[in-house]
Image (cartoon, rainbow, N blue to C red; front, side, top):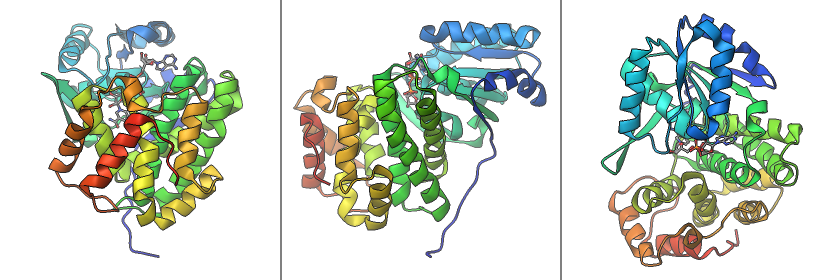
Length: 353
Ligand code: NAD
């Protein structure tokens, strides 16, 4: 076995159905007297439900979380946090809501309890991205790691099937890159393979039966394992490409991951034989990249960047930005190869690997 370093992050994870019943106890355990509940305008009902459940332990609801954590929204939320005399955060939602909770924690050190309702995985990480004046900056700090994560599959039942597929493939992408990252290690490899296996099993069932509780449970479990991979594993070409495409062309997060993953993996495949062996087991296929493409297409997700509104002229610009700052990747980055990946992702071709 090769030498390795494994870092575990301190977070309490509660998993199951009806686990929201543990919320008040967890608020007490963290010493929170008045929790500000956060969510998006779309999930205001779920937010209100938590406010009611918390009773006197709730400071109120802030339901204006938005994609990419705009600093202007964070400033409003901090104002509410102070005006309402809050001393802790309860976030219910996906990466956008969790990002807002992290942004408040960064500035106030407030403890966070998170109830994730998508599969994106922000709840397990020390990563925070924030947007100001059109620019997104990302940092890693323990200050933003949520203390407690309550996975309650009941709150994931309403995630629409196509969003479930794109969010699930976003999670799979974290695990795929952890398998071949520079700092890959056998513990994360176990989690990555299990996480992808669970999501590959769950997502086609959710497409046909969105209310299948077994599949929802598998998907949330897989998403958690994949989130741990993102939290302490490394990333490479795939995440870099998504960062460039999301940041420079304003493309949506999970959908972009869904489209790019098969192509980034196909590029790296010849250089990552051990990872490909794991992925063949997890996907039960000899062509894992093709399997991820099929999973997206059969689940009704878009498979071409042009369908997301990216213009063809953007391909060259994306290649330039991707190559401007060199970074680690298992296969050296060659301009022609990167152009081929972005072109194939733009056109929506099915990769052969
Ligand atoms: P999201 O949080 O933006 O949610 C998308 C929409 O779906 C929102 O309107 C939300 O309210 C709604 N929604 C969420 N769960 C729902 C449910 N169960 N039922 C019905 N509607 C629901 O989407 P996301 O993909 O989870 O998060 C994307 C954001 O998270 C991006 O900004 C991304 O950069 C960030 N992110 C950060 C990390 C990290 O580690 N910091 C990791 C992953 C993603």
